[in-house]
Length: 128
Image (cartoon, rainbow, N blue to C red):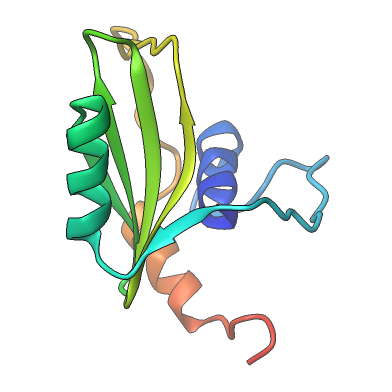
């Protein structure tokens, strides 16, 4: 979740070769109860059986963790899953799904994503 917020911050505030959260961003502890299964298969099977969702988008947070979005456009339901080694957790689910199209002629990113990723991998993790 923290990586998602930082990623969104990247999209909002970008400086060539240096990226970070917005100037007014404040780290805050965030606790919420999530539902986890030991395998991705069991989570997807349950969501597919109950809500007829399909996987519509995936992306990596890091080599050990990823995000998956599942949705059913007919019912307007969607969910966000986080996969880690040994578990898959339902982070958020909701209704009234809306999709947006990237505007034409939008400027390219100011941040070199590959360079930013390499820079992030060099930083020590919190508590390490």
